[in-house]
Amino acid sequence: MNDDAELLERIRNGAVDDFAEIVRRHQPQVFAILHRYERDFQKVEDLAQETFVKAWRFLGRFDGRAPFHHWLSKIALRTALDHLRRQKRIRSEINLSELGESALEWLQSPGDEPGPGPQPAAELLDTAMRELSPEDRQVITLLEIEGRSVKEICALTGFSSAAVRVRAFRARSRLRKTLTRMGAMKNE
Amino acid sequence: MNDHKLKKLFDLTRGETPPAPPEGFDSRVMAALRREPRAGLPSLWDQLEQLFPRLAVATVLIIGLCVAGDFAYSTLHPAGLTADVHELADQWLLAANEE
Image 1 (cartoon, rainbow over the protein chains, first blue to last red):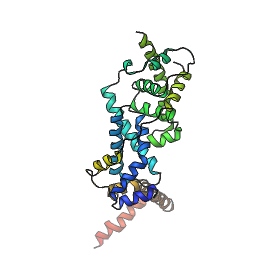
Image 2 (cartoon, helix red, strand yellow; image 1 turned 90 degrees about the vertical axis):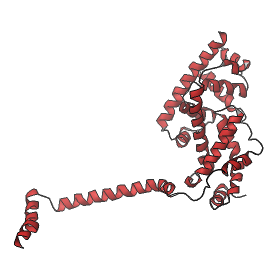
Image 3 (tube, rainbow over the protein chains, first blue to last red; image 1 turned 30 degrees about the horizontal axis):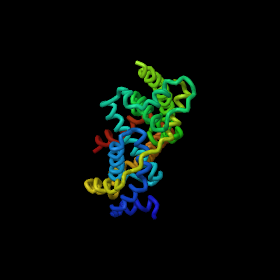
Image 4 (cartoon, chains in turn blue, purple; image 1 turned 60 degrees about the vertical axis):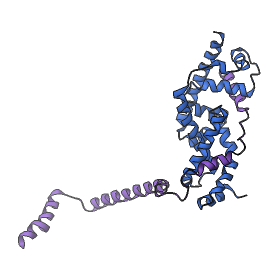
């Protein structure tokens, strides 16, 4: 099958239905990005749809200088950021009842226990990250969970490298405090 | 909560498998797209946005050339208020009187 550039050229020339192939190719990547910022699957699906609709709407602006998946990632991240900003106004308080017992026990343990599974760990981190600003959350997620370099994060978010480092430092510090507080809340 | 434990939490989270897109997701997107205006050739605004860095560089170059040209001309032909007034008087005021 054609690569993305050929496919996009065909779409620009009127082969609208070929965009479905673009969606099929890139949907796992888009779902993976958005899942880092929203755990409700139905909302992830809505955000993924919003991402592809935006990509379609702004396809004329894609100049092909960077790979298409990179351009699409930026749209997905922007969509996630807008979503986090909306959510921040609705909910920011910590609710421990949403978390599993294994994650909370690990949080309280003083030693170097193996830790909960990936899903409880992700839920625990997601809850703590609600205390962060949407921008700080995005930076720390890209850096520590997706394992992106500072340079990549600059390209994806538009922040300077100094801003990325400051945001990451602030996010780590805030997360440590929040997680400590969450451990103490369990005993209350 | 120390740095090591926080790092471990990041590592554990990284291991989570992302959800798979649901069956027929592409059809749902395509249905939404059909309600959208058609994505065609880039609009004039889009093209200007893409060209803007080049236009900005070209503009700066032209302004730079003009400034350099003016500076060079001023150096070669130093301006003086007295000489300029005389020149103006000769060319315009006196010429008008002669008529």
